[in-house]
Amino acid sequence: MDGDSAQSGYYREIARAFLERRGGAFFLSPKDQAAIAAWEEKRIPLGVVLEGIARTFDGLKARGRATRTVSLAFCDREVESAWGQHRDRTAGRRKAAEAGSQSDKKDKARREIGQALEGPAADDAEVKRLLQEALELMSAARPDEAALERLDAGIEEALWAVATPAERAGAETEARRESRGRKTGGLDESIRRRAVMAARARLRVPHVSIHYY
Image (cartoon, rainbow, N blue to C red; front, side, top):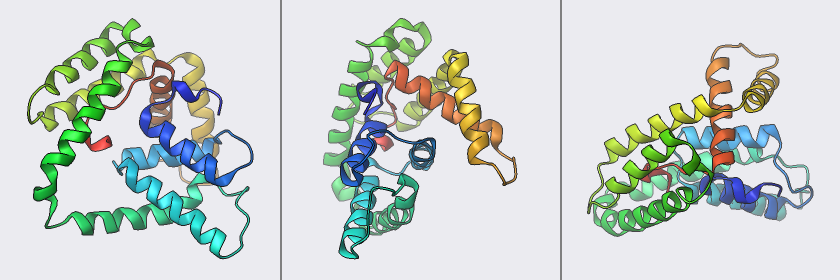
């Protein structure tokens, strides 16, 4: 897939899993990218998305259906189902498992943030400052998740500010194409989300909230 190394971990892992199962052309369409953005916005954990993708293709294989024309959005039903089951499984036992899981997630987040600070993100002073602040928060035994959420929001603002004219124009084209024939409410937010996603990929900026890991 072109530009694979420039994608955030969440985007990259979903894209890789989907393209490996589907076969065919190794690139994501605007519709596929919109599906990732929607799951990202809902804060669906990476493992749950991958589970939903696997279920979708396993089901198609069991029914003898072709997969090469399947879009990532087609996996949404199974992703949502997996997410619901994930919430049910974790209800009542979340506290017992939280300590070890939180530690693993924190370590992964710290690695991704550290890598970002060695990449193109370091060239933007504001993005770099926010990433460094997140890394400092991650040094605590129990990082302040609310503070990390605020930093994530700040990073999105910074990425929107540095989105290139080409990224903004491409985001607008994709958002308008996706909303064709539907009400235009939320179009500006859709454009912003797509432009931020493009800038995030270009600068290799990960999320800092542990919810994404």
